[in-house]
Amino acid sequence: MDSNLIETARQILQNFNNSVPNFLYGIGRLQFLINQLKDFDPDKRLILRKLIDAFLIEMRAKNASDIDLGSFGCRGSIWLRIHGEKIADSVLGQYSETETDTLILNILMEQQTQDLIKYRNVDFSYSISEGGSLQRFRADVYFDLEHLAMNMRLISSEVRPISAYNFNPEVLKALSLKFVKRGLVLVTGITGSGKSTTLDSIIDANNRTVDSSIIIIGNPIEHVHDPKRCVVRHRSVGTDVLSFKEGAMQALRQDPDIIVIAEMRDADTIITTLEITDSGHKVFSTLHTSSAVESINRIIAEVPTNEQGRVRERLADVLTVVISQKLPRTLDNKRVLAKEVLLMIPSIRAAIKNDNLDEIYQMIQQSSQLGMITMEQDLKRLYDEKIISYEEGWANANNKKRFEEIAKFKV
Image (cartoon, rainbow, N blue to C red):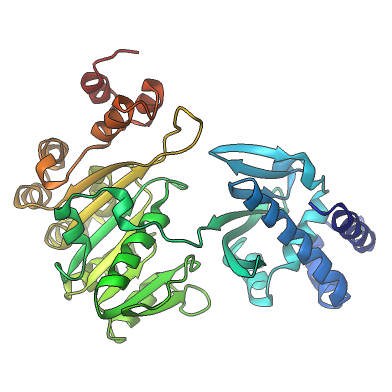
């Protein structure tokens, strides 16, 4: 980390922030900073931006997945998430809340600043040039006790090959446009579980193997796929399209073969996703759920009661694959993928239509020949292979009693 850059940027920040009247606070204080930045020396603004870039370069060097800064919650430090653990990095310096407010506002475009003030949150992509190549980050800026906080997550510049997931051939066929022309594929998991990485691997596999058109709708766009055998469109919510719902509906008029809706966030998006899948397209999306059955429950529960029967029928007809994943800690203090895979078969379709979702877990458990696996079975595999500890497997299990039974060990 360049100590001269830190010192120069700190001096600029201190001088800049000395002009802020003490009687201002909250939105008034931030609005004053916004107005002052508009007329601030461009060369000095560039130095402040370089400081953020230096944080990100240091983050990359330490193999961190995320960086956090700003407001009371960070206690003046810059925090990195390294192999799942949040660590305050003393090398990156200490900053007051007003200094981090200024650093964050300095990298926002005018429209992003307006959205931040209006909605108290803004998502965007951020890029740095490192070693002659472009490195992208997903950024989220939000309010915390009337100051600004920011998280940035590293977007891998390389796509993991689909072969690395060891999916059963039947599952790979269901993921490929070459073999299955329509249907909904869901990748689910909590924040930070690698959903986007898996989704990008599936998109890349299709991009390499079929001649088609792919439309990706994201908020923001993370990995940018180079067109190979496909025309690939990237539409960022807020800049290229107003919402996931509008992007999905507009995609129908853009000659798509595959439509990627990066996240089904609300009832409108869920219903729209089911409708465009039902129209004969192959659709990929994600949900913040930890199991296949929970994903089905979540989709149905998100819509109004009077719509749930229709949604249940439509979901049973269009759903093809659900991949739910977690990243448990390994014995050598890294992360490894654990996954649950549901592949739609007639008995599972019937269970969804008849609202017998409790039967699905057992169907997954007993269908390993088709490539299905429960989270507990995959965690047991990792435990048996001495990749994770029993305690880590138990902690990540959705059904802890079942994990205990199949692992033949009691806590």
